[in-house]
Length: 418
Image 1: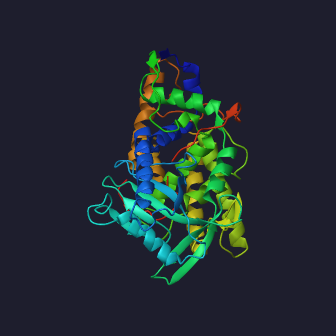
Image 2: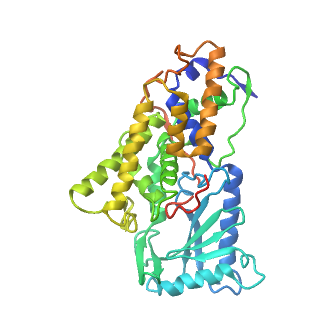
Image 3: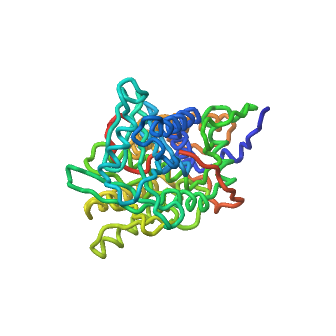
């Protein structure tokens, strides 16, 4: 079955939005990797509750949380196709259970005895979860949570123990409530979907032919996602690149996702959405700075669940992230509405999003310009620069509820490989 793409639509997609779409396309976790992740967590949950496990009969339920649950998964490393998965393991233990003991039991349940499934894997006991690292670099974090008797629906206690810092406590959380809250409020856009499909064929050099339609290999195809959700993914990628060579924690993905809900009316433009989220975060940090305090972001569906309990560690950490956001917005605004020097464009994209997706997006963009040029539909200056302001973004219309999918809501960025 073929489909004809409207060339007029291709010519009026803002080039900067098109490039951001191309970058977003490169960082998506494909369907095959998603299916592997699902298999990993199902096997792990069955394993920790197996006969003879320290947690035999004590696992009430497992479910994916974090980015996996809100379709915001991205590759943490594009070239090596690595990504992370967060899983909540609801355990049938009292909420006053000793955190050190609880985490130790989960570690023993995963590691098992010599010869068991995960014994030869890298299994790490962290302060709030147990991490399993697979041979391909994919990680699964299993976080034990005990349900609060008589508490709000799906609320529970997370167990925290860090021996080096002499920390031991429980923390009230409700990841399921946040997932439901977020998914109910983030809508997809028919306009964005049309732009994405057009951009994909344009980048592949297929716009002037009758193209065979192929489903995207994502659990949730990018065109079914909200522009705001894709902007969250781009902001996470930007964050990962900025923190690659830094010590300390980066802003958790769940903080970015929660704050994005309050970034104003949704646009169909990825550039506008990225600027809106970054600007909103800047303003919230500015407010905290004026009041001489750290930024506080709570779970909008469960106020007792504070997302910023470990980041920012201090006001310096939030100021560092604010400076990153200011630079991001400055670059986006500089690129929007003016002619581009190709080398400058490539350098800025690399700085913001890393070499691998930036270079591919750069190549896709100019391949698409060549396709449009053959159709005599592209404005080119005498110097050969591409005119970047072709169409103003429109306010979204025809919104639909998206499906859901994939990974990590915070932590450290360790491996410097892009």
